[in-house]
Length: 159
Image (cartoon, rainbow, N blue to C red):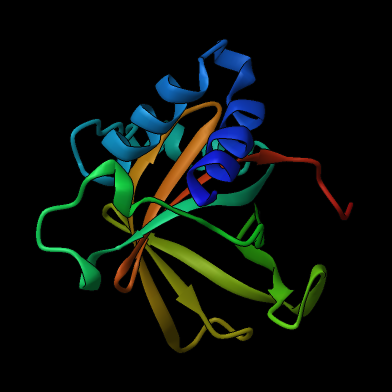
């Protein structure tokens, strides 16, 4: 059942490249497994990251697998992220009601090579480090602690 839901979600989200569901799952897996890497030059990276809002679609928890396979792909809750100037705007799904956001906020961020440093609201303290795995006009993948998360563009929810 899960594979069917992921198949449908990825098929809809990846329609811009006219992929079949199986091709979409394969692309997401290859990106999250490190088989397909696209890290733009620093000059282009910021524009691509800030080109719109991002929604989590799928992830692999690297703690749960020694050698990942497509069966290890999990459907992500559609957490919302938007990188705007030096701000990271986020809206995390409520775990008790997946139709609503639970926690929302704004933090600062900056790049350190191919890693996004998530900073406190005042920009003085590093709160988290997310490694860039993939970024192009349509997709983003980050290693967030033990999760490798695949994102696609979504509608912007703020100005």
